[in-house]
Amino acid sequence: MKEELKKDYIKYADVETKEIEWLWFPYLPKGMVSIVQGDPKSGKTFMLIDIISRITRGDYMPLSVEKFEMGNVVLLNSDDPIEYSLKKRLELQNADTEKVFAIDENTKKLYFKDLSRLEKLIEEQKPVLIVIDPIQAYMGDGDSNSMVQVRNALAPLKRIAEQYNVSIVLVQHLKKGNETKAIYKGAGSIDFVGFARSMLMVIKDIENDERLFLHSTSNVAKEGHCLSYRITNDGLVWLEDKGEVNVNEVANQDSNTKFENAKNFILGCIASKGNISATELQQLCNIGGFSERTFNGARSYLNKNNKIHSIKKNGRTYWCLSSPLDDNVQSCNVES
Image (cartoon, rainbow, N blue to C red; front, side, top):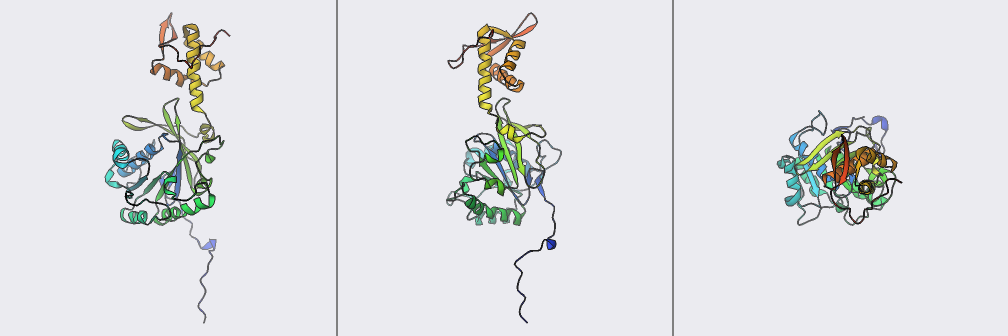
């Protein structure tokens, strides 16, 4: 009797249905790869360091009554030295650094095409989270703009995530340009987005000195709420659950330009009259097309930085200049 040939196909009816396990619902699924996007200096690495710190302590998830599963973490970062930056941030966020590991890349660089050392570390320390920051540094000679090469380079990560049931987070910088949808803003091929099961974005809101943590898209659950945080000299502090926020609208706001224009507009209005009532200044900014949020943020910034100050006169608040106008700011004709 001939030996029965092994089937090279799968029947869906024979596959056991499984529920997704979560490291942080609904942002970071276990056994899958997620991506966190953001501009340089936007605070995405510091945010992930805070998450890592909470995991090492088994502490509460940001703005939640749920706690993280306590466990080990692998943090691979090619931009920031461990001894000068990463460890200090971890300690600032009260991490148990006995539970944080990295591959020694001083003698041999780690690339996606050979993750044997990473797998050995996983087998020994059994981490619940692996952070790789940024993606491009570990692509090697692979072209991050090539759909095929991106898929081929990242395929081992998918296998590792599934095999060890670990949550893997890749950090991706944003590209320059005017893409209207958040999912197209990442540097490199759109296949990074197609590969990740959960896409997250960090945006710096300079008007309120906050960072916004947004869920761009998810293939495994409904997108989570927008969370805000602030980075201070004492570390990172989570501020508010802002609920459902349209990530495309936030990602397309040219905050720098609007904020600078609002600051200059306020200075110009005050300079034209010597001092101006708070009510009149608010009305002029409305006419100028600035939102209340942008106006309040710009006025607060100018006040904190001693560019303007308020006085009381006849029971009303007036705003005055605290220093001469810069050369790039012109007074405007308020009457017109």
